Image (cartoon, rainbow, N blue to C red; front, side):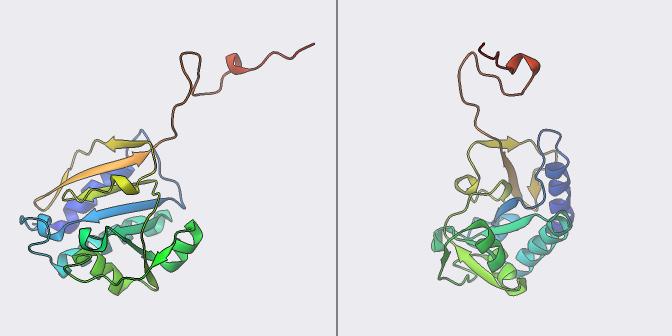
Length: 190
């Protein structure tokens, strides 16, 4: 099992998608079960080394693109999200008091906590997109409307991976248009 190569391929698929772009300054959320990567049920075989590989691979991909990372914890900390303090402040997220452990947060959160400059946990975010490694349910953290990303590579280790991005809501009805053209121009009243 080569977690780094698998995740790199997933990220290549995600970020080279023609349907959307996450611009610099976007917030990307990852939910990750290191147990599921190792082929075990969620929360039964957490691995700090696997979490470290996931975090380092993500950061090597996101940092040059200037995309911020939020790492979702497990249900035992109410799926709180770990991020750098300056990211939380910039996005206006409320910081909460909890420190991740292997069995309350998970291997990826603990690895990220050990490597971040000034890590904090927040309870709720609105991310622009993200990936879910192992069925950890990140949808609650991605901006409405979520759109699934079709990934050619959709596993990391033994864990299935799902990608999500967001798009603006399409509002209106039959007469609504979603791109601007000359036909959208309003006649002036004389």
